[in-house]
Every structure is written in structure tokens, then in C-alpha cells.
Amino acid sequence: MNETTEIWVKGILSLVALLVVILRHTRVGRLPERRAGQLLAGLAVVACAAYYNFGLFHGWTYVHHWETFHYVLGSKYFPELGYDGLYVASVAAQLESAPEAEFPSDIRNLKDNRIEPVYALAEQRAAVRARFSPQRWQAFLADNDYFVRTCQSAYLAQIRRDHGYNPTPAWTFVGRLFSGALPVGRRTLVLLGLLDPLLLVLTFLLVIRTYGSRVGALALVIFGLGYPWRFDWIGGAFLRLDWFAAVVAAICLLKRERYAWAGALVGYATMVRIFPVLFLPGVAVLALKDLLGRRQVGWVWRFAAGFVLAVVVCLTAGSLAGRGAKGWQEFAANLKKHSGSWLTNNVGLRNIFLYEAETFRQERVNPALIEPFAPWALHMERLSAERKPLWLAGTAFFFLLALTAAWRLPRDEAASLGVVFVFAAVLLTSYYWLMLVVLAFRRGWGPAAGWLGVNTALYAVHLIKPRAEATFGAMCWGLTILFLLWLAPQPWRVVRRRRPVPREARA
Image 1 (spheres, helix red, strand yellow):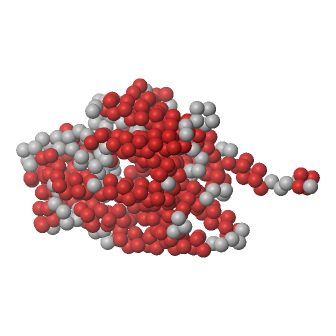
Image 2 (image 1 turned 180 degrees about the vertical axis):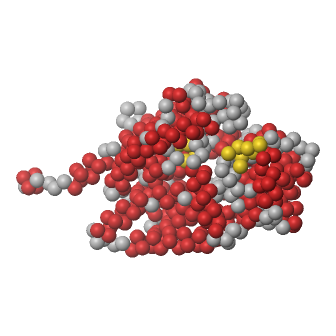
Image 3 (image 1 turned 45 degrees about the vertical axis):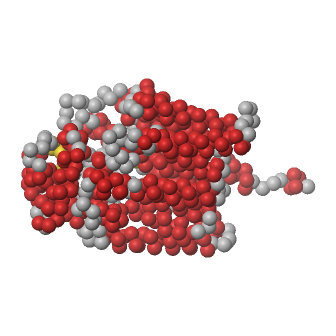
């Protein structure tokens, strides 16, 4: 199945799912509940198969070698590689273990994220090589050699032009529990790649048990048919969805009133991916509401205790990941550097203030350069600085809408508003938007149906203009409109609910 066929099939399935949800909840042409449930359940099964490309995976393998190169080697050899050594060490190892293999002409220098000729990094290569003990270097030689001999040289060259290894030390500690003692090989990478499917199974079982089969089926449909997180991005990778499992499980546990565990899971997700901290504001609003209203607030302290304990444990674990407490300082510096990298598959509110017609036409992309998108990235950086007051105002406006909406929601739904806070505050690569699955947990059907509409439109945009700037630029606008339609009425509803009833009306 080629990409065009995949897009057509998943786009049609997304449209069918949208129609089922609409017909089920509208008066005209309304589907009987049982029939709609059967259709949704069937679509959930097909959607799960569709996510895995109906068993074709990546075409020639289940394993995502691009991802596992970074996450397996990066975590296993974190004590030596840190955040700046992966690519130069890989080249040095190839020179020793496979000098006959085709050699890359350039790689990304992870100290400053610039692509440079390999020969210019000889001194840095030697410095990173010196961090290894003889025994550890021999192990790295063997592990790196698997990728050199398994991946095509052009593919491996592109891998070394990516942006390096970027997880937190806390994730690295967890990752090393699995990757640390295993030699890299096909069997190892398949086993490591099965951790995410296992987490997904457990997560969606918890969703079904918490919210019922209908919501569970809708969540599976959103997961399986999502354009931004198709299997090609991180399917078959190594533990890329632990944060997602933790966030979804935390929302379920809020619903089930297991507050300490819910807080701990949000704390874990925050410490392995940072941005999940934005699932806290909605919960914080309800905590403030209960504190001001002098209601029972035991749940607040249990949730907070779970969160703080998880953060402390993760901070400690990250300090034991191989680079001591300084690993966190190195991560902070790396995050600052990485945040300056403008990617065409970034999604967030800020992009609607930056994207212009020339962005969609790729006018600032120069194929003659060693890094064709460098002029485009510089242009985006300049626009971001010039228009900072605009996108900051937009962020504040969306925060206000979401905080107001949270005031009158149950705790689990208030936590689900984290998707809005994330959208308003940061730019994330497309596959992180798997978090939109939580829209299925809403009591109203509008947000989930709205996302299915946006998702179907993204497949259509891809067929018309299959470029990341077009599809993910459209996604930014689609989510902006969806969240506005969902949240804009909320302040009025809160005011109307609190407005006192006139004495005459009470009489």
C-alpha cells in the first residue's frame, strides 16, 4: 500500500466516522443508539488496523530504525554521549567497524544544531570517543554497526541530520532499564518496539472500563485514524507513548476518584516530556474553586502529593541516568537549543500568526543549500520575534477561555482541557497531538466530531498539496476554529449561571 492509497483509505474512514457521530446525535436522520454503537465499534476495530497500515507497518519492517537509532543508542550510551555526542560518535564508530560503507558528507553538529561537513568535526569526534571506556566503546561499535549494515546509506545520512537525542534524564533512566543490557539487533528492536502497543492496550482498556464501550470506541477511532500521528511518524519506535498513556490514565483515574495516582501520573508525564504540565491548570481551577467555597478539599492534597512525589522520584531517577545531577542542566540547555529549531510539522496557536502565503508556496526553501529549510527557519524566527505581542495575546485569550470553561466542568474533563493549554502555549511536532484522543471523554459530542472533521480535511489537504507546511498549517487553523467554537460560549454560560434570579421571577 503506497502513501496515496493510505491517505485515501484513512480519509474515507475518517469521513465515515464523522458521519456516524453526527447522525447519532442529530435529530434529522438520527441513527438508533444500538446501531450507531455497532458501527462505531466496527470502525474502532478497522481504525486500529489502519493505524498499523493493515499489517504492512513501514513496508519492509515493523521497527522504526530512525527512531530506535536515537532512542536506543541515545539512552543506552547516555553517560558517554549526553545530548551532543550521538552523531559524531556514530560516524567515528562507522570508521572503525565498517570503513567500506558509504560515508556521509555532512551531519548535524548537535552542539549548535547546524549541519556541517564531517571532516570539520574531527576534533569533536575524538573528544566524544574519549568519553568511552574500551569495553563500552566495543559495545557501541557493535550496536552502531547494526544500523550501518541494516539501513541504506542515504537513509542513515538523513538520520544523522536530524536533531539528536532529546528526552529528559527521567525518560532516559526508564529507557535504560530496557535498553541498557540488550545488544542491538532485530529481535531486541522488535521487543522494544512492542512496549508502546502494550501501553496502548492497557490504556484503552482503562478508558473503556472508566467511560464505557461507546467512548472507548470513539477514542480508538480518533487514535487509529489520526492524520498527524500516523504510524510512519513514531510507530515501531521505543517507548515514545509512555507520556500519552500516563496522561490518559491520569484523566481516567480522576474520573474514578483515585487522586493520588492521577497526580503521580501527571507528574511522571511532566518529567518525561515537560509539556504535560499543561494538563494541570484545569484541575488547579477546580482546586481553587473548592478551596474558596470551603468544600471538601482532600482530593486536592492527594492529587498534589502524588504529583510532587512523582516529580521528586523522577528528578532523582534522572540524576541516576548516567550524567549525575548535571544531566538536568544539560537537558535544559539542550531544550533551549532545540526550541529554536523550526520544523515544518510543528503545530500550535503561534503558527497562525506566522504562516503566510509564501510559507505555503515554499518560497524561502532553497534546495541548493546543504540545509534547504534554513532560510525558511530564519524567516519564521524573525516573524516570531516581530509578532510576539500578537501570539502572546492569543495565548492569553485561549488560556482565559479554557480556565473559564474549567470552572464548571467535572475534574476529569477539566484536566482534558490540557489539549487547549498545550495548543495555546507551545509548538509541538505533529505526532504529540495524539493527545486529542481525550476529546472523546467530553460529555458533549461536538469537540470529538469537530476533530474528526478537521482530521478528514487534513487528509484532503494532503491529497491536494502533500507538503508538511500545508497540512500542518491547515491543522493549526482547524484547531484554532474548533477550540474557539467549543470554548467561546463558556464565559457567557458561567456569567449566566451565576446571575441572581430577580425577586419578581422567584415570586
